Length: 213
Image (cartoon, rainbow, N blue to C red; front, side, top):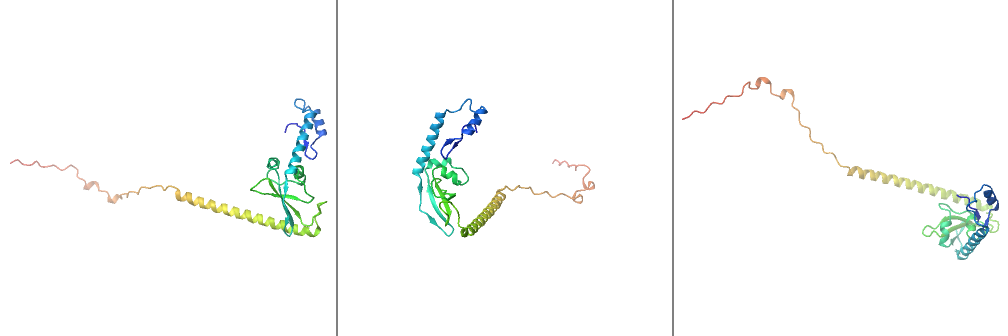
């Protein structure tokens, strides 16, 4: 990336030390934004985060024997800013204006609608410190092991399905391949079957002239 100042989402303040070091290296000699522009940008980000916070919707909690869950629906404009291919850390989703007590974990996405985030928290977690009860740690470990086993089985089934599809396609290609037509071989004559020179006439037969009457 080019040497633009780094904005910290928590508070939207410019890293002064990074900017000072960049000035010493001459990074910003040509295109350094003014302090007024920095303040305006920080204010814009803070206003946007505040607006997102007001538009974010939280579902009622539901639970099983290990976790409690809830869905968080955020404005669609936020989705483009989320990290791709993974879930967000605690500090990341809080920086976008999502506000919940401690211990909540962003663990999955709602595939049909990308702006619906799925959160979970271990039952009995202290909402102030995020500390998990000791008696729940074993349940969490068992659940994670079970999920890992299911994922391995899913991958095995996918590989088996792909292998069968490849075999079926190979059979289809073999059946569709044109068959080369081979002409039947001509029987060869053995030397004994060939006429000998003694049986061939030495001179062509003379035709007798027809008599006249």
